[in-house]
Image 1 (cartoon, one colour):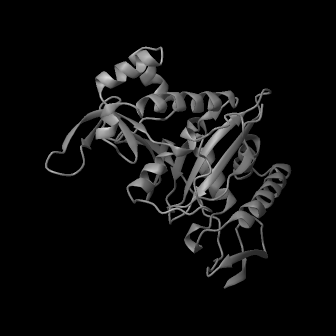
Image 2 (cartoon, rainbow, N blue to C red):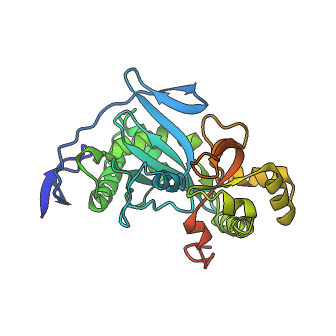
Image 3 (cartoon, rainbow, N blue to C red):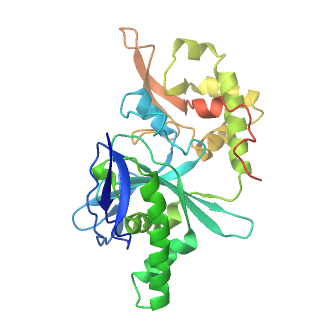
Amino acid sequence: MAAIFDFDTGDKLTSGRLRTKNQYVPEVVQKEHIYTKVHADAALTVQNKKTAMMVETVNEDMDEYDRAVGNATTTSQGRNPMAYRKSLRITNQNGHTILVYNEEDEEADRKISFCQQYEDGTFSKILTISQADVITIIMAGNESDIFTQSRAEKICVKLGLKYANSFFGTRKDVMTIREIVEMIAGELSYIPVYRDDLTEVERVEFYQKLVSRIKVMTSQVLNDHKAYYPISTEDLKYLARNMGMSKVDLLKKLKKYGMLYLTPSSKGYQTNVRLNGTGEDSFTTWRYCILRDDDLENDEDLASGYDF
């Protein structure tokens, strides 16, 4: 049974209302965060005195791998909306996670797109905020200029309404706009920037051509895996020749487009994986693992969804 609850985001969005289904929306207050950067386990980490905020550049389709191995449960409503984007995944000390990327138009104006990953593994819809607005909100917290503070409040109210109206997480998932902005601002220089949509069209075309060649290889019939295609060195050389490029160029392109399955224990572009099932004949070996992505593979109209 659906219900309507009053809530306060802490961003001047008082007397707000949110329609939820069997959920309780608590009052949320603004919290202050102070971060310092450190490096650990080859992954960028942002920490404060008590807790840590993990920051990871990911291909958001890695979540397809998580789903394949049962680490996350998704619904049609909460599927990852960033199917064609490499983004920055940021998790703060409150356990909240957002995926972010930046777009730059022909006039060098930047628009930041983000979505929230809820505690159950599902995702929110994509919301946007200009980079200028992000900086304005941060400046408002550091100075007493009335004009800047007034503009920041208006930005928070407008975006806060959009966030509340599109929210379908649980009590623990509720975030303030200032919390989101602080996460974005703290990692602004690490957020992937897309300067036009042509790159994404090229990415889809490249993936489809590559996978069409991989699927007819005997090694893939013997070593079928739900999350990735394990490719041997010899097979990679064959694919490179077939694609009209060198092995190094092919690997660079796979890395650029975020199509390789890599773990902290990976060596270079290779990952140690198990082949030939789980029986007595199975074994582990090093392979170039190219992520499976049904969205990219089955995109029949490459131009649809792109705005030139």
